[in-house]
Amino acid sequence: MAREKKRRTSGRRSPLAAAALIGIGLLLTGGVYAGASAAMAATTDTSPTASTLTVEDGKKLFQANCATCHGLDVQGTDNGPSLYGVGELSVHFQVSTGRMPLQAQSPQAPQKPVQFTEEQIEAMASYVQSIAPGPEYPDEEILDGQGDVSEGAELFRINCAMCHNVAGAGGALTEGKYAPSLHTTSALNIYAAMVTGPQNMPVFNDMNLTAEDKRDIISALIYMQDNESPGGYNLGSLGPVSEGLFIWIFGIGSLIAITVWITAKSN
Image (cartoon, rainbow, N blue to C red; front, side):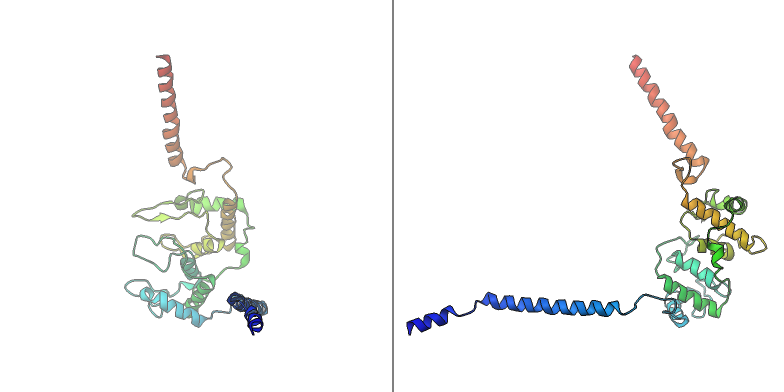
């Protein structure tokens, strides 16, 4: 009897063995589930397409985010202008640069982080275009950056440099307004600004600047964006103001320091 009891005692499983079996089972189950999920995801196309959001979706987005100022039917309110005639191009410019929705009334709507995806912006622009037609997206050729850079630079100096600076660095205007820098502006938004005239900017229709002229200006700005200043550090491309300040502080300051050092050395 004592031997039989001893054999039974020695045959018992350890509690750790049971826990190990449960853990192995959970790992195997999780691995099978993860593999099956990955296989299903690989066979399902979840990438967004241009048709994922409709004009109706754009209407809902507009009414939830823009109607407070612009009205439910884009007719405008006391807090914001009517959008009749602005078209999809103006909507894309204002929303894709973060200027809209406006956070607070100010002399000028500042650029800020964009709050919507490109797909959502396209949907809202399509909605506004459907009920209040206006300027449309241009042909891809106008935005390709393959125009005459030299001619575009000349046109930019004549028509735009008085506000945006000859290097496209922007500049101050009156009453707290300013012309923004164009160093990171996309080709589409450069075109949109010329056609729609946002805020303080005049409208350049085809009587002022032809489609080919606009293509040349866009090409010149893209060239400036892609090519750094050949003269080295550009000091913000603000011209004689920043250059004179640099010379005054560092140039004259260095001369004074050298003079003091020579005087102290001779004494």
